Length: 83
Image 1 (tube, rainbow, N blue to C red):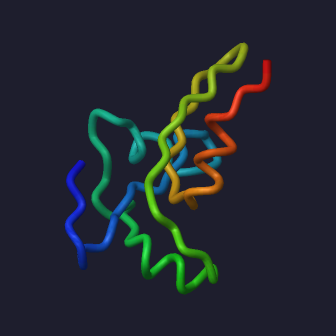
Image 2 (image 1 turned 180 degrees about the vertical axis):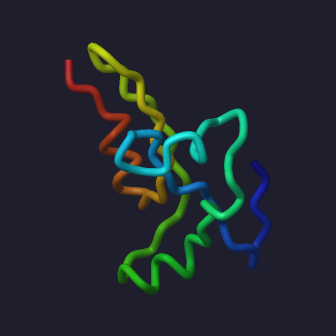
């Protein structure tokens, strides 16, 4: 992804869980209504979102895809794996 100075980052924000957006969040056919502007959402939440995060939860009976806005510090914490 190329980000140019002055351009806002946009992310899909959704969850494939049955209580959430389900198939609208399926990575093969993402609903464009789920796209959020990081700057606009950051003003609402009083945060400075800097990137998008996508992760998969693989549970015993189901797999769930989650897309979200994220702060740089949050991304660093997720990637940290103590030995």
